[in-house]
Length: 254
Image (tube, rainbow, N blue to C red; front, side):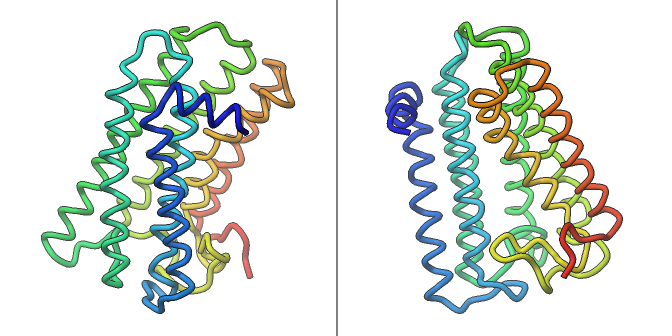
């Protein structure tokens, strides 16, 4: 871990510190869930910004690590794009949490509708930029890496992109539950519905391939065929949970 942190801080200083800030902010939001009573859709309002901050921390550190391998890439522009776009998204989600209001799917006023649209644009831009990074690995614009490791990064990036865009499934319906209104019983912290279909499950699984696949490939699989099979199975799992959600069935029913 010390090697990872030292290397990341040296190679991608901006994303290292942005990720660190997101981690600290996420922990502060978690603390606020214990000392405040403000709720949105029946759960503590600070859970959502905590999840987004922690997820952004993982994204920033993963992308900082992978981008260090690229040999012809404007890392500084990518770093600051991520900081500005995702930083503003977290800030708005936290602002709405402090008011006890929805950040996503909130079209109650022209201002909240505009800000929700801006969040969608920010997420789209980051996803498109991530796809551009994936293309750099596809065309071989990186330092020499073990084939199985380079391929795992490619697969992870593409799965992230596909299931980040899957967020438009929820955006188009203005809800993160299928078969009923938002709210109600959900899994602890994650709050995935245990009564209705919930596309957030596939969204989460697919996007966090960004961390899961390269780690498994580098430390355990060490074989291109095994990496491909694992990536396919991982993708099938994400697709299955999406189809399950669209059919109105919960990932875990209680």
